[in-house]
Image (cartoon, rainbow, N blue to C red; front, side, top):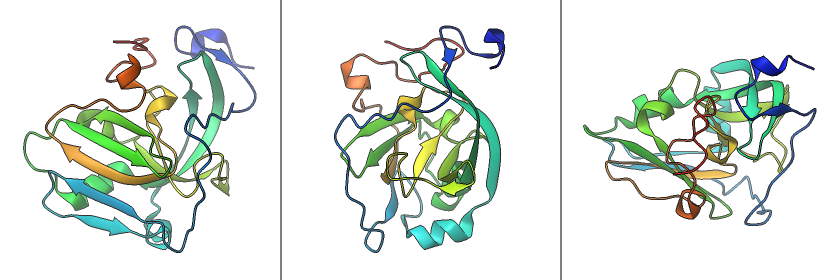
Length: 187
C-alpha cells in the first residue's frame, strides 16, 4: 500500500478496479469494429483493431483515479499515443475540445491540451494483457491526471471540435476538465 500523500486529494488506494458499465455492457464484433477520427481535422481517419496494434508505441505505469474516491496504483498501460493520432488527423486551428464516443453510446469531452499531452493514450493492453471487455476492449482512452470518467471505454469515435458540448457525466454536472490533483469533480 502506498503512502496516502502519493495520491491526489480525496482518493484512497484499493487493490483492483471497480468496473462501471453505466449504459450496459456492449457486444464487440472485432471484425467490424472501427475507430473513426473526424470533426475539425485536415484528415479523416479510420482504424481497425489490427491497425492500432501495429501502431502501439507507448507503455508506462501510472495510477488510475475514479471520481468516486478510489485509485488503483501502478497500472501498466500500453497502446497508441493520442498525440500520434492527433498528428495524423491534423486538427484545424482553434480546436479546443475532443469529444469521445463509445460503442455503448457513452460520451465524454476532453480539453484539447489534455488530449495531446505526451502521457495521453489510446489503451489496447493493461497490465501486460489485452484489455478485457469489462475494461473497454478493444480500446479506451487514458489520461493519467484526469478522473476515470474521461477514460472512455469501447471507443469508436474521436471528434475534434472548436465548440464545447457536454458528454454523459458533464451533462449531469461533472467538471469539463476533471483534473484529479485540482479535485475538479463538479462544475
